[in-house]
Length: 355
Image (tube, rainbow, N blue to C red; front, top):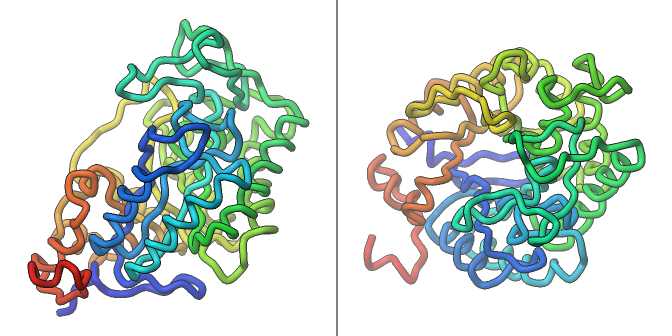
């Protein structure tokens, strides 16, 4: 029987040669939001390594949207040139370039992981963070996030819209809106971080409003024939937080709005989360969203083996498999997996003698 992992899939007018997706992974290697040769080699090597879709790391829609000062950005036209070069290389390898647009919210203004992942105060290059409500991620941070007012909300929506215009110009073929991992959109979704009393807080309908308004804004610039994904955290892994039932409800609404796939992750919102980690620990959430919302899903998180990925697809638990750390360990993961699953796939001609 032909491998499911290496079967093609068409989303809108975009065809992926297989179900292997490189998950967005921050590289903390940009200056002023600009991509450089590190990003070209990092993303390009995974395209030549055989993945069907490469999703670029969380890319900030404004300077204050960055997690760290070293994050990629797409808030100005000057960012486009290098990104376009990277995307052209990805396409030349018969892979599809994607991007994740993001705003870190209260989790912004921190140093890179190898510099301690510490909240940066204003004297050390930090900036004022924003959130749904003025609740910090960790106690004892040097400053509280500001609760976004109406003007602040409008600015973020406008930033996503303008970033999308640049995404199109840079040649991306898949766009993912980041509403997971405790970043700004997730901060509005969850009652643990959203204690607002206006139309953006309280009820489920109010808490999802900001995310839906961003989807609407992105759709005014994103071509309707190209795939649009949303990444969600299916659960906060914390009492009283966002939960799998709300994830299903939101996913149904997103499907009605024309979203093509829900990239199902979890956690990241609160520092007191208690995650039950194990191989494929998030797959049941992807399956629940897929079956109960009747939408395509991507599964991600501790999926490290070819047979494991194949089984997820065979069981109908998800439609795409996203690889993060495993692809950092091995950029040629798809080439290795194809051999293991007895699938004859095309290699870069420069590497064919090693096949």
